[in-house]
Length: 318
Image (cartoon, rainbow, N blue to C red; front, side, top):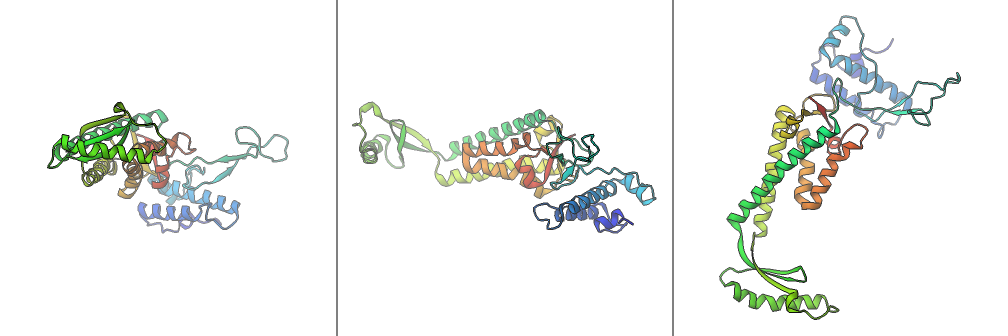
């Protein structure tokens, strides 16, 4: 006699949904193909049983029917949070039982699409539109903070540029711009000529001296950290409360856990914190990398960006 769904997950019939969910996640972790030591076919069978048990016990209606002895639950294995290969049951029509070629691939293997039970992944265009809104909001916040930093903490300085390359930037402090220029321009020329011994002699129009405003490095670092915190507050807090940032709310998307439940603080922080931290730390290059991490969902078979995989989340339709 096969195990009951409760035995499959290792919980009692009186277990709460949170306990059932935790047990399901534990079984899924045990069935991870990267750590599984047993036979592959046994893993697939156990995965199917675990997934069926979760589909039934996580749904109050199906659970009630199951507890009453009426088990008409679904038996598919397309919702489990592990990378399972599902063998295509179709044959080539010769009676030999060999997998059919075509959409299933030359060997008849179908990659299981892992999605939360009863939910639909958000369309790519909708996700990109929501991302665009959120990125725009964060950029506005970034420029606003940079403006504040410049208005409050910028100091006048003399900047020497040679052949479009900034050679030196010196704060004026207790002197005048002209006095600093008279000292720094020849020093910058000498330094440039030392670094470029094979270059042609400098002409007057090769050297440009400007008076600029600069923000001290310590203040810049502090405002980078403030930018990180503000961006996380904008994304993480509303996501924990509703599953939606402003962009997701406008385009009717929602961030959920792999089991379809609402995300918590740790998942929301990982989902948004990783790309935001990369963007803040590496400036323009970091922004490109961060957006690439998110847009990886376009090519991923499960519609997950790299940040989704790290946080174990999905973006679904509301």
